[in-house]
Image (cartoon, rainbow, N blue to C red):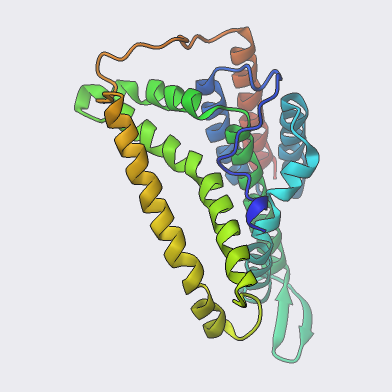
Length: 267
């Protein structure tokens, strides 16, 4: 399951989405998130799904990889669906079985929140899968650069966010190795009640935290050895520039937001 986490990974391939300016992809992701939360009807999700399918097709990402990114969420998805389904108040009663009552409002909320969670994870994964960490840092810094006038550390913030995303797959792989090593030594992570499973995770979490702190220290020393001192006076090999494809992509996400706003007003 740990290897199914795609957030933070980069899938190197030549595609129209990979060639977009990182600022465009960040703004598109923000616009996509806004559109997802604006949807109130099921047909609105079909519009969002069509946009997402087009983005996956143009980015040339494997469908199996995108479906795999949802697998770690299956427990959370089931919990979210059941919680909204059985504890939704109000609306017309659809089914009653003893003390269990299912209402149409609860069913509607269960479907909406589950679909939103899936779309948000897949949409965010496309951003990291199609953007290299260094390029993503430049894009975040450029977008936050106007805040430098009020003393906001744009470069440092962008660097921290990118390093955090970059270390997600690294720590996931490290956790998978530790889990296999502990399993070979007789550790059991699957059986027992909730308390026993939580106790069994201690042999996994302790070495994982030790490894994370060691990697952080090595990274800090490497940056100091290269005389890293932040973004002041820093030059770039590749200067970010918006092109025709970037404006077309922003227009597409603008159209998506317009359609989601329209379905709210129509319905």
